[in-house]
Amino acid sequence: LAHIKAYQRPRITRLLTHRGQDIERVDVSEPASISTGIAARYATAVYELAKEGKDVKGLEADIAVLTTAMAESSDFNALINSPVYSRADQASAITAIAKKAGVSALMTNTLALMADKRRLFVLPQLLQTLREVIATD
Image (cartoon, rainbow, N blue to C red; front, side, top):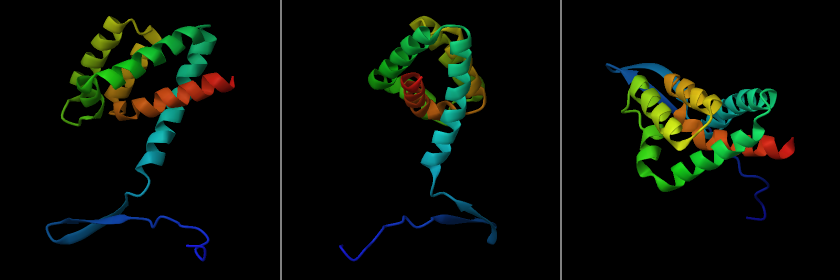
């Protein structure tokens, strides 16, 4: 192993076919970086709005509530990760859960928007990014 200077993960592509014809090559090697990028954009917007509204402490409380929900509820995790639920079902369910849990209007609206855009799967990365942004500011 000493002779190997650096290991680079090979780019993985998948050839899609339709009725026996090649139609496209799709890069599937970086799904984590895509999720991180999406989460960073949402985190920046949410943090700026919370800061503008002087409610960063409320945002920290929301992060704690949502982190606990992900840690303790397999149903919650299924809701944010499963493609089986429609956008409308995800949005109404996440809104109801957030309101019942006492999550702020800002975060509730963000979660509803994420559901509408089929982005709830990035919630864990969003919460982590928000923690990091709050810590550095």
